[in-house]
Amino acid sequence: MRFAHALGQCFAQLAVNIAQFGIHLAKALQFAIHPRRPCTTRIYITFQFGHFAVLTFLEKFDTFMCFTDYARGAMRLSALMEVPTVYVMTHDSIGLGEDGPTHQPVEHLAMMRATPNTNVFRPADSVEVAEAWEIALTEKKTPSVLCLSRQGLPLVRTEHKTKNMTAQGAYVLADAENGKRQAILMATGSEVGVAMAARDILEAEGIGTRVVSMPCWEIFEDQDEKIRKRVLPGGPVRVAIEAGIRFGWDRWLFGERGRREKAGFIGMHGFGASAPAPELFEHFGITTEATAQKVRDLIA
Image 1 (cartoon, rainbow, N blue to C red):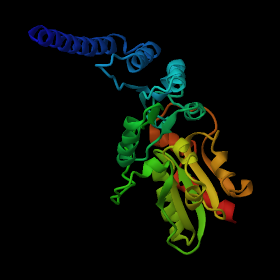
Image 2: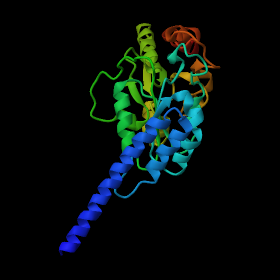
Image 3: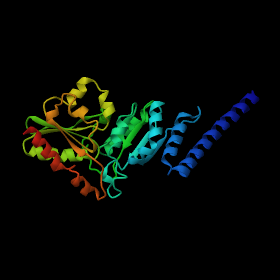
Image 4: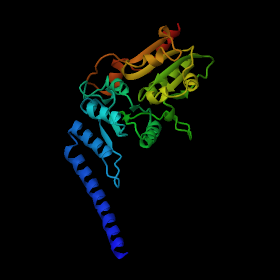
């Protein structure tokens, strides 16, 4: 009995030593090779996928979103192998400013959304960020990408809700209050604030306007038809606002009861430029007034 007890203690101590070694190794590797984006990503996936029974890593990888170009292979493999790695990609648009078009992602959202078994989140404020984290940390087989801005964003979720609204993929953030609903503004991330400001203008003009925040397309696609229909009913004109290319948005503009002749897009149509963020959004027409005018043109 004493021998069995001593042997058990030895194995228990061995497990602790292995765990401590793994933790120190992970920290050392992260510190040593963090600037090497593709290599770092693959090591994170290796830790996540090849853990010991006594040691589980839930890994997070973070960098500028434009560097998903370098991490593409590893991100694709995490989706293929059903490894729920969490990728935090910041500086998600022309909003990063003076670093210029080499660092400004415009096509990257479309690339990540095209990857099977990947949840791509672009939260509008800190509330949606927290909700996206909750979903990412409870995933068992699907990697998550959190696309976050460089610039500070206003709080658009000002009413407390016990339900995780991001878990629906898309939801009504604000509805028409001034008569009949004539327009639906769909947006993600920093452009949800643009949509909300445009709604204020349109409502003041008597144009009933709904704002739909769409933090995760993949989750919304999986919702029942009745839920998608409640969020995106047929009838009103639709305008999508996102500081990326249009690719993929036609699914929500023309499909889901939308109409091609009554749909518009406010966003990027090419690469960015080097300037302060407010000047860039004005230059590329991703503004409150441009959004409101697009709605006016479509309902004319």
